[in-house]
Length: 260
Image (cartoon, rainbow, N blue to C red; front, side, top):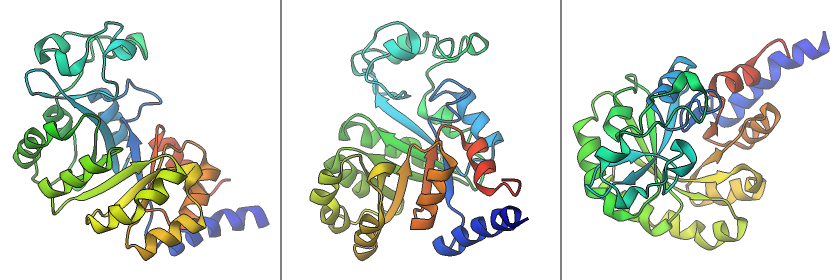
């Protein structure tokens, strides 16, 4: 009986602590079940009631924005092309689904605008810039052409690139990605001074001290990539704004389930 009561109280305490229910962000779409950075993964994430989908982008040789995590296509297509040195027409002929499951055979590497068009009204697309600032003029054009009814956020590991991104998107959320405590310490103030809205941190480096420092600098904190409900609850209790996960539907159920 006590366990059941606590299962009801703890999620309420977490929501009260953070001031709002944390955003559940689907990492490369619902990538635990579907091939990452594909239309199939994005649609499955929306079906799983994710608050946002995160995707990765590179610029092709012919200046088309392609959704893919790696600089080459080897891991997800079995054929080795470097994105920046390859025409998009060639990239689009590759099978980006079979590596995950034969039922996804024929999934293409999507153009960013195709992924954007899966975003339901009121939901958010988190765009991770994997290349450099050369993509920004094309990114600006794509986003503005597909902005209506959608929210956008931008993230990047290169702090100079994300600072430049903020100049292109002054009204959108821009966050610096970081996985190391020493790098976080070195660039915390720089992120704040540049007008970034927050930092997106690998979850092991998120602790009470990091949260206090971020609050003092008026930076929100997001976390990645979390597939453990207990870890998610720890982060929520600390006050993170969003949790990126490969399993959006499942994690959401585990966090807020009244049966645990």
